[in-house]
Length: 305
Image (cartoon, rainbow, N blue to C red; front, top):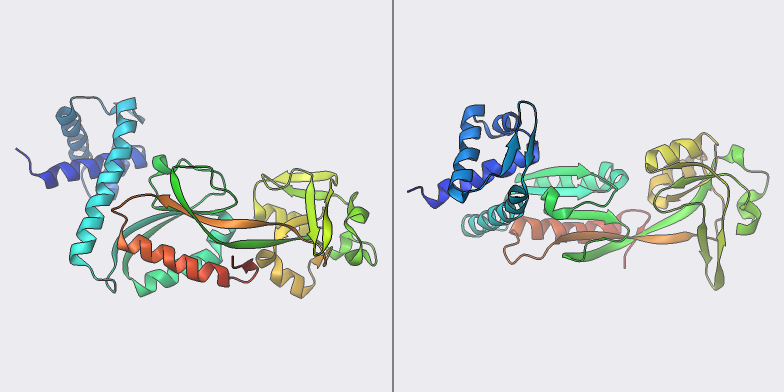
């Protein structure tokens, strides 16, 4: 009869096969031969008396039983790693993997710097850093935490707010007429807009201290779901755009962009971190979450709560 560790190894191989999408790719990741990884998958199916995956020459897809097992297997592996960590690691000697999904722009800049600093302090931690602005299926991806700008559409997760992103309307100087940076929102209502989905769809609510909010609906010249494409289009003078202050601070300073309405701001967006409610949550994940809670509000252009 196999030992419990053997069962855990089978589950780890199964999870890697599911995430890699093929037995051969998973075998490479695990340092196994393809036949060995295939045998482990077959052995797990035999033990559970069910087919976990459909295999063809070039593709592999999970059965419904395989998809159910994937969630359970990830939870069991997390629990084991947490147990192992608590018994053999100290707070100063964190080790093990953390899988993070982060927003594209922040994830390429300030958040990457925070993650790198965390790993420098804890060299035993391995971070898998995935960038995605779209909503994700947390359990399917199998991540440990999800950093998201905007609401988190998953009520099964614990959600913690880290800060607020300050946003403003900016444009290239060539797009604006003289004195336009001091105008009221209504006076730029016909200026073309580069819209960022899903945050702006042609309507921009604007607010100012001690004044009622105003909503303008400028003509949308271009719509994109990528903030880097938005910035490039605005810099080219194709239209104005709503962007985070932290993202355009250097361009404003250098005069490449202008704050179109200095007294007005678009709605702030919350920055959240979400993670599963799990009594076996690892020490390294808790330490990473606390690092983010401390460092994210210090990013220029992101306000503390």
